[in-house]
Image (cartoon, rainbow, N blue to C red; front, side, top):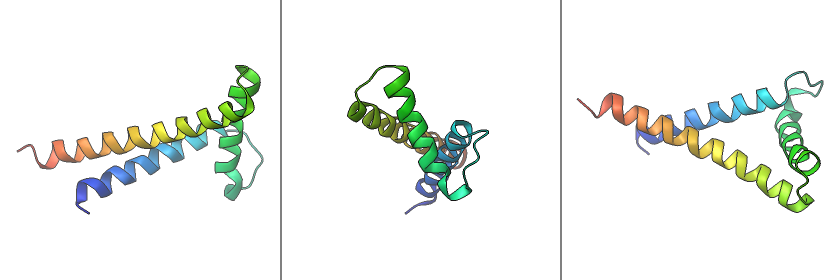
Length: 87
């Protein structure tokens, strides 16, 4: 792997950690349970708040997490390429 891919993966994980911290702010869950709590809270929002069916709510919550990871990777990869390869 080149450094741009590693930096993209790092920014994707930072974005995921940011999303988890926003979704579980004020929760009393332990640190190891926070990702699960964030996913279940997001799925609960889609199912109960927006009226999606249960399976669709879980699928959309997974797609939201995948979108955050993809966006974070893309931003990090492009930022690395712009800073170090654009001289």
